[in-house]
Amino acid sequence: MAEIRRALEEARRSAMTPHERAALIRDLEAKLHRAAEEERRAQLVVEEDRRRFLAAADRLVALLRRYLPPPKGEGAYPHLPQQILGGEDPALRLEAVPEKATVLTLRLMPVRLRLGGVDLVVGEAGDEYTLSLEGADYPLVEGDPLVVPFGQWEVWAFRRGRYAHVRLEVREGAHLSQLLVEGRILAHLVHPVKEYAYLRLMRAFSARLKGPVDYRAFGSELAQKFSEVPLDTLEEFARKGLKVVRQRLERAPAGLRYLGEVGEALGLVQEAKHLQSLLADWLNYRPPTRETIGGEIGTVTLTAEPVSIDAGKVVLSVRQVEDAVYVTVAGQVPRRLRDLLVWAFADQAVVIAREGHRIAHVVLPIEGA
Figure 1 (cartoon, helix red, strand yellow):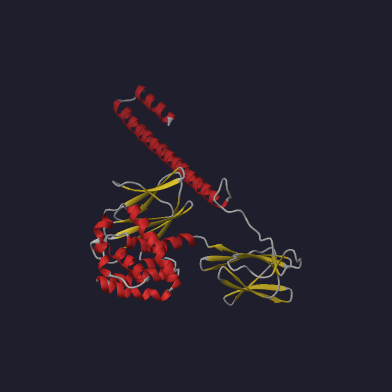
Figure 2: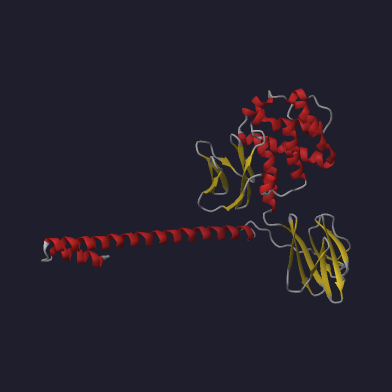
C-alpha cells in the first residue's frame, strides 16, 4: 500500500498532460482503495480467529475445571473400594454387594450383581470373561476398558488379571436431562395460565394424596396470592411442593389416578390430564426429547462472555459473575441461576438447567395458554 501511495504522489507531480495524469491518479486511487479493503478484511479475519481461539480456550478451561478435582476443578477424586467381592484374602474379602453400591471390585468368577439398580452378570468361558447387561454380552478384555450406556448410567468395567473393577457413572448430560424433565412441570406450575391452573391442581392433588379434600380451598381466588409473589419465590414454592408430591407418589404410585378427580372438582379436566402426563414422564424418567417436550433442546458452555438464548419472541442472556450465574431479559431484573430456572412468558416458558459450566435450555409451549 505504501508503494501505491508513493506512485500516486509521483503521478500528481509528473509532467503528464492533465488528462493522462487524471487517468493515472484514478487508477492508483482505485488500487489504493482495493488494497485498503483487503487490509481491513485481513484484520477482520485475524480478529475473528482471535475471538474463536479465545472462545475455544474458554471451553477448554471449562472442561478442565469440570473434570479436574478440587481445588482447581469441580470433579470428584477417583475412589476404589477397599474390599473385593470374592477376594482370597479374608481381610479384604467382601461377602456381599452393599445395597446402594455403584462401585465394585471383584475377583472374576460367574456371579450376578446389582449395582445402582442395574442387574449385571459376569460369565466365564474358559479363560474368557464377559459382562452381561439385559441379555447382551460384552467381553472383559485386559487393557481395554468397557463402557456401556444404560439409561441414565454408563457401566464402566476394567479388567486386570483375575480381577475387575465395575462402576456406574452418571451418563453425560443425564443430570441436565433430569432437571429439564422437572423444569417441564415447573414451567406449567409457575405460569399464570387460567389463573395458575397447574399450580392450583398440584396443591389440591398433593392434599388429596393425604386424604379427602375440600376443593373450594383451591379455587381461582388463589391466583391473586400467587401473582403477588416474586417469580423466584413462587418457583421455589412450586418446586418444594413438587418434591412433596413425588415423595407421596413414591410411597403410593396408584395415587396418580386422583388427578382426574382433582381436575373435575376444579373444572380443569384437560389441564389435569396434561399434568398427569408430565408427572408420569418425570416419575418414570423419560428423558426430554423434541417429541416429548415439543421444543428443541439447546446446550451451551459458560465462558467469560455472555451466552444468548433465543426464545423466539425474546432473547435471554446468561452471564457468569464470579461464582454466580445470572439470567437477564431486557427490561427485567436479573435472576440467579443455580441448577434450574423457569422464565414464563405469555404463551410459553423457557426452562434453563445448569450443571457446573454446562447449560441446557428449552422453549416450551404451555398447554392451555
